[in-house]
Length: 146
Image 1: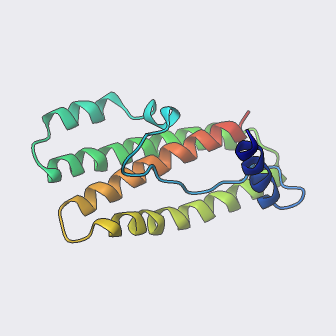
Image 2 (image 1 turned 120 degrees about the vertical axis):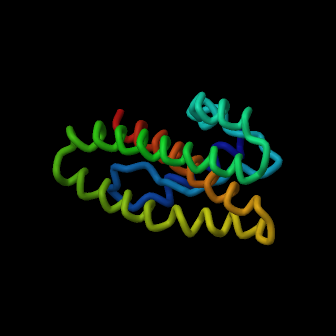
């Protein structure tokens, strides 16, 4: 219980004074798991179908590359739904936040994937990270839009 309270305070303290947007932090599920149930629920059935047919790491990597595209499309749909009704000052704040996230996502995923250099799994890890980050950002945007 104390850890949760301390964590919440850290997040609140990390937000600039007067900010309307909740703080955001890039996070990746550790290799050992477990996957956040809210994130897991967002992976599409098409990913599971693709993975069931995948025979190689490269096949699986293509599954995650396609899933990353689908998750990016879902993120864009939520972005539009959240963006449209916002007043101008909140739009400016959200746009600045989104630009920072976009600039940080790919380098973050590269860092995560670079822990697995030297083999075919590198691209799979990168695309998986990209898909997961889009899911996490979509969930965050949905909270912002409430």
